[in-house]
Length: 176
Length: 453
Image (cartoon, rainbow over all chains, first blue to last red; front, side, top):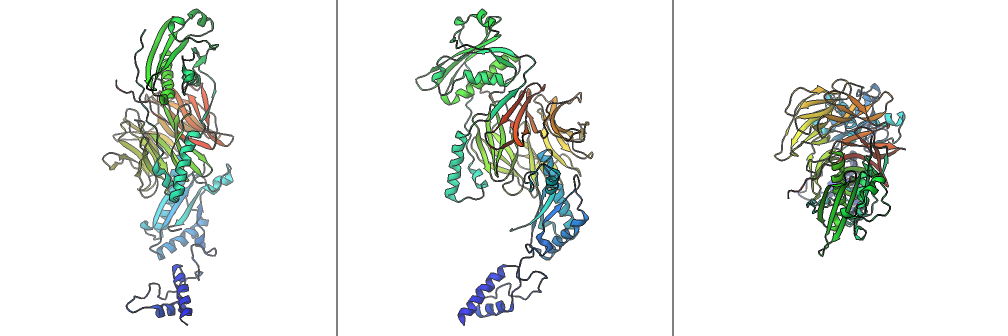
């Protein structure tokens, strides 16, 4: 009996490390484990079940929009296109709901032209996403926007298709 | 005739930066040592950059450079280095010496050398002293006037022989062209091989390349402090651009701009005390000037556009920069003490990466032409006249040699990054290739300081 509880407790502690909700079993195990004077473990509180978040991390769940992290830009443009607005909103919502979460927005540019000017173009793309998130209510302290310019291209080719892939801002959560 | 003595300023060796090792993704201590050792060994074993020359000056001065007495017994012969330097400038034609062994003026049959086409002759001697140092004597002779133009004696260690040969080539270059020579200078550049980046410093002829920083993340925008003893550069090892200043002698470095957001485009003031940088911490990309000694920074201007690539004029009076405030990236300048920015480029829709000539009268920059090709051009500040000097597809990062006669830049040949140089009149072209990897982001170092006697 004690061994069974111990197994459940260990499983519970492992699950508590993920961003999932503790189950009833876990709660029970924690109560049994408690020694006199010890505080109940944080996370032993019931939370509403987030949609699509059962047993998984919404940031990496392929079914969740939050697992998509790239916003693409047209040539010489820094406007977030209509087709990307929902993605920005989804991440902004997550950040507002998780005040301790932080993101780095990484701006990129295609390879043509001066490296430093391209660094500034990438910065402009990252800043555009940052501004859009702030307008949606995300705190400035949760966001850092940086640029890789042309230095870390995702597509290595020298054609329009590669250049389009590299005109991009990526959302990276701290701790990833 | 006795020769005046010249001191060769002992160029300190470059030390591999210990701090660069942490840039290599936190390797374990044993692995870290192994990597350090590998890179040190690699530094000495690595082949020099190969330099090819195309084209020549309007007139090439015919010079005969004869082997110095006893130089074949030294670790480094001088005459071949001198001849290679002069040839590489595109301004000289080497006259066949036919194995002649002439070391003193009394041995010279001027009429004979005149008949061979030479206008000048270089002869010399080397003597190994009891303490192992070498006494080098050279004379530059005017074959037409049948007189000595100049000559010096140097007493140097064996390790300084190559540098001494470059200094002799500089003396010859100045005596025959009137311009200061740059053979004894160094260049910095970045080599990329796979996912590995190395910031290297080599002699201007590509020899003696040493790695100053090795990293698994990009390195861009290296720039020399005016005293030649420090480099500023941008490293992405922290997963974002950060500006570092590194001492070449000691190898130690510090991050001088690691603010929130991106930090880039370092540019030294002529007195070496301030560093202009581009920061995104205040929004956008904006130019700030860091006070390196006392700390703190100033902001000359504020705009809602991209302002980047700052560079100080040699007299410190102006700051030139790239801005797209007019709708497209163009070159502007602003008084270094502050004031109204003034636009300098008006041809074409993309003009970036400007650097002043050493006399401050011109600037070299990159311009995109109607076919979408990026080329190096020079503009006269007073007349606004522009001369396009290159015809590659992706030429970038131009910088002047400290005598203003050559421009070093990055180019691409068959998909591979190479360095190239072109004379300021466009006639002489050089290509510098690395034995392995892409080479980019070149920066020509300053003239060596002359040691007071």
